[in-house]
Length: 159
Image 1 (cartoon, rainbow, N blue to C red):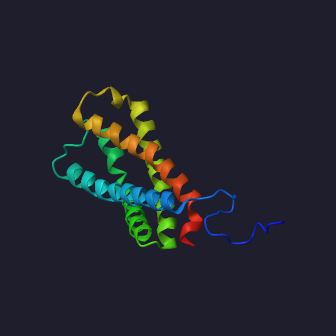
Image 2 (cartoon, helix red, strand yellow):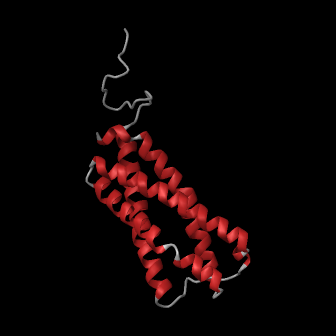
Image 3 (cartoon, rainbow, N blue to C red):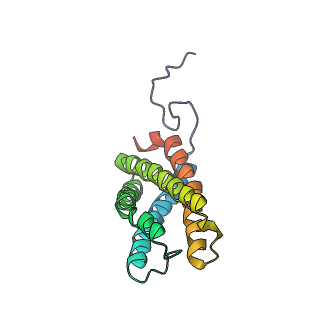
């Protein structure tokens, strides 16, 4: 029997990989949680940065100038993450779209931060603020590709 590759078949995506509804649902829960943490955590980071400064690794003017260049891009990512979390929680296709935008933004922002820290040697600063930066970098560069992969594999579940 010949199967039409264009035929819509629940549980099968365009690459003919079966997705189990329970696994997709559990993955969606994780995606919503990850995106929510990204949105809320980013807002909290910038409140602390501009009020107490407790997350500032150093008082070097170059470092502070670099960090102060991020709020607009982080705001974009956080807005996409929030919309992605809401949309995915409600099972809406636009949640998938904003989740992918947020994931891509997180990878980009993580890469920018890691490259700066490597170039400037700030990873050598032994402080709680630097450990927080390392955790943020890991959150972005480990979690976001997993998010993107999950959203891509389960894209047909929201259609």
